[in-house]
Image (cartoon, helix red, strand yellow):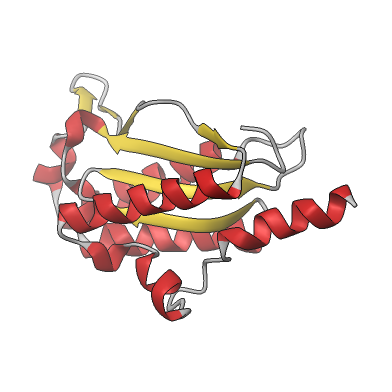
Length: 173
């Protein structure tokens, strides 16, 4: 993913295990997103935390010579999940063991690649899809839907996606 570009990014848990429905995991996801936002690595315009998948509408804002923020996010969250599950739920942790002999743990599996969003209409459609997925998953509270309907952002993570396109228009002129 290139810096300065808007993407719809999706990542799933290994074997679609419902890890992300755990409240302590949700807290870690929010924390790691906040770290990347505070470090000016990403701008987040929309999200949904489903039971087995994350959906983001985000812009990478990192320097070209730095590690990509989505890789940083996956590493940070994997480390945090490992620490939490070692303490709280070893049975759940076992579901992510890919090599018992060497105790290799993997939380994420690849889904489709990031989708580059080129215009405001595509951004609105991606955001609607993200929010619909959260509602179907039954945990719509773990999405940015309320931000777009009320303007309130209880986790202080979001910017309206329209701001991305306004910034582009200003930079072009």
